[in-house]
Image (cartoon, rainbow, N blue to C red; front, side):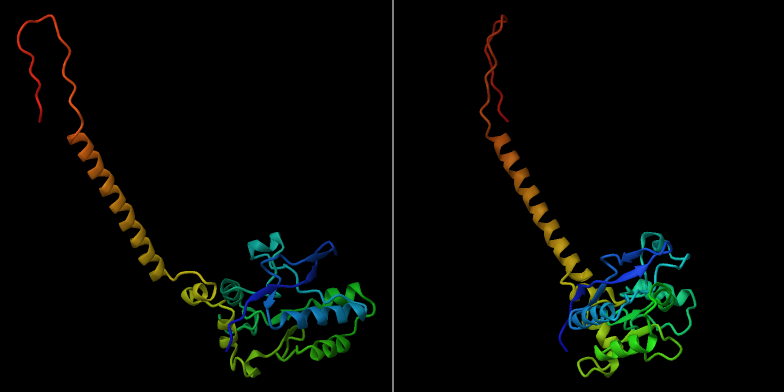
Amino acid sequence: MSDLTLVPVTAYYLSAANVPTPLLAQNALMASDLAPYWENFREACIAAGFEPYISGPTDSSDPRGAQGYTKGFFRTPDDQALILLEGTDGAAAVDESPHQAGRAFDLDLAAIAAAFASYDYDQLSALANAYGFSSRVSGEPWHFDDDPASNPAFGSVEAAVEAVGNTADQEAADLAAGQPTAQQAAVEGSAVKTALLSVAALAALYFLYNAANRPVKKPEHSNTKGPEYVFQG
């Protein structure tokens, strides 16, 4: 299984003021192998006379909602955990949602129907199927994904989530993102600390050496008589 990256795509939701609004950059992400299919699906929808609006940030319990954040597209592990805490029916466990793999989206069917007279769900569903997405979750006609569990490249949703490094296992996520693990960071930090101590020790030795070998300036003559002594330690 090849590692995948998450790439930005174009996605909109309809705001409470009925204004088409682009998803936040950190929100409009999809797995790199699937992103072109989403873009083509969206263009096909527009050609058919409607925008495939993503479910908007309507959840008042999520403080990020006021910032325009929606859980209808890409989700982090924290997003999925929050959905579970909200008791959302049918929500998958953390690391078991195709949203975390960048392979799913939730459409705002009511907003699409209200904004576009030409909208027809059967047509939308057919277009989604044509580009590899299906509404396979019973009772959730708004949810579409490519069923990563049936993809030979993955075999499970968990494997698809791991492929993009977006797991609740922070070490796995760091590795996928090219970041050092906590253990590696500790080792690197120890090495830096040792190097700094070595530099400090060398600086101290250099200072002591210079102090010990600094020329001694003889005291100037005074009005008092007697021999002048120069003490050296």
